[in-house]
Amino acid sequence: MDAPRTRYKVVERGRRLEVVDTWNGNAPVRPFADPAPAPRRDLKAAARAVRRSRVERTSASTLDQRGARLLHTKPWYDDKGPRQIAVSLAGQEKLKGLRIVAVAMALIGMVLIFFFWPLLFILPFLLMNEATQKNLRAASTRFLDELNQPGNGYPGA
Image (cartoon, rainbow, N blue to C red; front, side, top):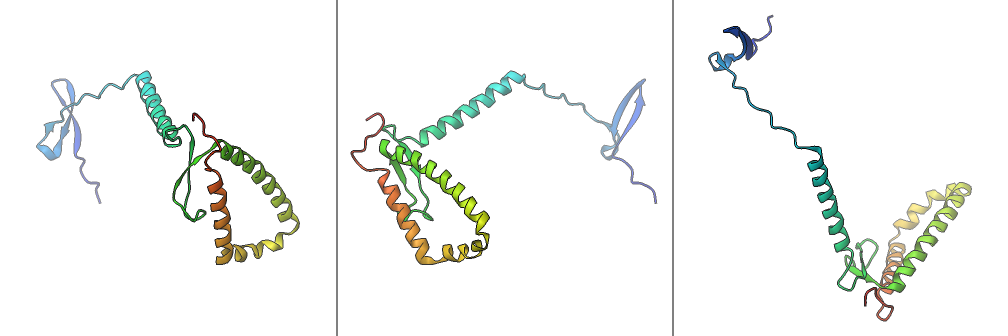
């Protein structure tokens, strides 16, 4: 079995090599000019502009008119969600404290998991309980409501 004929072949015409399209009646293939690549600094400037606009978009969407930080919630952990909460100055301090508590609880949790790992088989059943989910979501909603209490002060107000 022979290989199929190729579409293009190279022939010599007038002491020059030309590429011929055999499917188009042996017509010469028209050369096309490659577009010149853009200078690298233009690409870098465009990348900086895209990056800058993304940062501006992000920072604009996380601040309200008063300059308070906005927190976007989801319905799986907030009974009133999805919503946007303008976090007051006191709320920002609570969130900083929450980060410290979360790190400490994670470390304590790892130690407890190391010593009491068989209890991990019970944990999914406790978390899948509808009453437990409802209580955790209600506690989370109360905490989120406290982040935006009037009179706690807002940045720029």
